[in-house]
Every structure is written in structure tokens, then in C-alpha cells.
Length: 302
Image 1 (cartoon, rainbow, N blue to C red):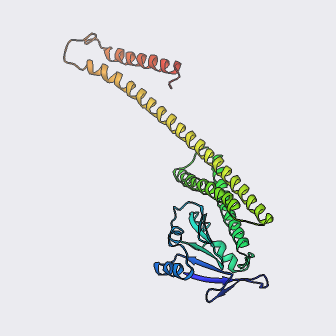
Image 2: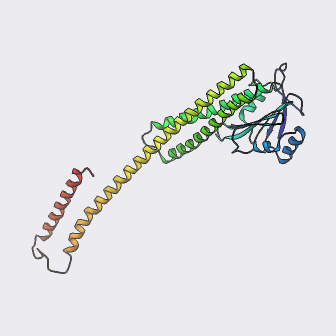
């Protein structure tokens, strides 16, 4: 789907326009093959870069084709889903274009006038989009880190909670990768594109924020790793204890079974005709049990 929007400094709100105009914002979401062909033919855009903008595994980078600037970054279109996708921003001579597989939530905020977005100021728009992307990553990071911190104080986690923890670890790993590459993109953008000094400082601040988000994610990953190691050790200790108890129980059962098996043989045995032989045997078994248990207790096995 291709839609056109425009707002000048004099206009109070952004408006959707029927077609292309100089200074417009071209918003492209999940385009079809025919729409990709149209963008290539109508605006002389690079087909390979447009197709890469729909690739979820595309890394954030900066590319120049003729006089157009292609900036590949990462976004979280829907905060509640926490899925990371590729977001392409094209700075052309006459317009700015954004392309993604899913419509980001912050685009709706722009349409509703909650965010100042003057399409005729392309570099300002770029900085605004960078800021919105940072905010979405910070929100998801804060939610995941908060959830991990809550679980850190729980002595014993249920199986479902452990599964959730593993999902959060996967999200944090994706965030770490995205933060790292986005940070590099910001640095290259500052070097390759000429900004006003004030705008340059804003991007430098975004770089610092991305670095902070990266460190927070790494810290939470370390917390999850420590928790996982703790529970693995705890489960291993419990398993060893259960095996020890079962082994001791088996030995305790095997002793009387062996003795009774011997005295059940059809041969001449000591005390065979003694009327108290049964009690002697029970006493022997009890004595062996007591000695065995005292030995295990002394060795702190049980």
C-alpha cells in the first residue's frame, strides 16, 4: 500500500494527498510486486534496496545510490508483539519515503498530529523517525527488564515462568543485536550526511541512548544467565539427592532380601533348628541397617 502525506511549516497538521508532490512523505507498507515496480519506474528508486527493506534479516546500514540516501534500520512495529522488523528510510531530492512490512504504531501518532512531522524538512523528519524508533526500543527494553527483575526475587519458578524467561532472553538477544547495529548506523549517518550542528547533537544523544539501552539489555541477559545457572544447579542437586535416597533405599531393601534368600535355600544352615533363628536374623538385619545408616550420616550423605 502506497500513501502520500504532506505538511509544510505553514500548515498546522499533516494531510494525506492524492498523489506525489514535491516535499511529500511517501509511506509504503507491505507493497506488492506491482507497487515495487511502480516505485522503481516512477521515482527511479533502487529495486534491490526496496526489496531489502522488506527483509526482516536485513542489517541496519547506510547506502547511497545516485543522489538518494537509503537508511536501513530496525523497528518494533507493535510494542505488544515485540517483534523486530526492518525499516527503510529513503531521503530523495524531492521527497522522503519510508517502507516496511508492518505499519509501525508511531506512524499513526504522526497522522493524528501527536508528533511534529514537517515533510518538507527531510533531515528533520529523519531525526524524528530515529527518535521514535529509539523510544519504541526503550519501551520494550524497560518492560522486559522490569519483568526479569521481578522474577529474580522468586526462589522457585514454575515451568511456565521459566519458559517466559527463555522468551525474554530471546527478545533481549534480538534487542542487543538491533541496538548494536543501530548505534553504528547513527555514527555513520553523522559522518556521511551533513546536518546542522543542533541536529547533529540530537543524533549524538540518540547514539548515547542506544548505547545505554544496549548495556541495560546485556545486564539483564547476565541476570537471566545467572538465574538459569542457579536453577540448573538447584535441579542437579535435587536430582543427586533423589538418586542418593533411592540408592540407599535399594541397599536397605537388598540386605534383608539377600539374607532371607540365603536362609531360604534347601541346604543345612547355621541355627536352622534353633527356635529363635528368625529373631536372630531380624536382629542381624537391624544391626547392619543401623551401622550402614550411621556411616552414611557420618559421611553426610544423608
